[in-house]
Structure formats: C-alpha cells, structure tokens
Length: 121
Image (cartoon, rainbow, N blue to C red; front, top):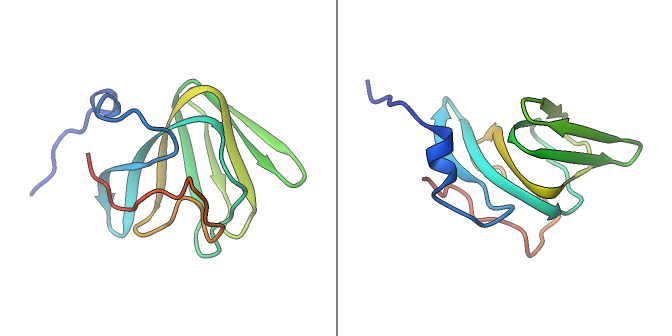
C-alpha cells in the first residue's frame, strides 16, 4: 500500500499562483486538485464530466447564464457536465477540485488562464 497522509494546509503553502490547480492525490481515474482563486476566470464548460468545488478557505462565486451560486468556507457544489459557468473570487479563495484525470481547467474555451495538467505537489 502506497498511501500517505496529505495535509491540505501544507500543500497550499507550496504554490501561490491563481487559477493553476495542483494535483495532490488520485483515486481511480479521478484527481484531487488544490487551487487558489482570485478575480475572474473564463466562461467554460466540461462536456464530458461534472466538476466539484469544495471551498477550504474564503469565499467564491460561480456564475451561470441564469444565476450565481455563492460558496463560503466548508461549502461544496457540483457543476453538472456541459453547463457553462464562470468561477470568481473577490478575495483569494482556496478550493479543492475533484475531476477526472486530464480535464483542462478552461474546458474547450482556451485562454491565457489554461493551466498545465498533472502538476503534482
């Protein structure tokens, strides 16, 4: 067995850039990623998968075409596959993302905010 304890607070000290998820673990074909959000992201969707946002610190919002969902520390939200959305955070927010390996953070939108995949910390 190759498992080890992963301390989220410790992992969050290992990077500072926003909108650039870092992988901390895998389970089957799913990755657990930590990210720091601040300001606006881009409108995008993920045609083949749902996306989980779990707020660890701070607060964030997810804008949809017909509503905005507000998330605070301890809140979790699942964006269904194929649904166009735009996350943003007025202040820096720390988030745990759960999504299948290989998912591009900007979906098929492409942007200067598209992060490299499979960066482990």
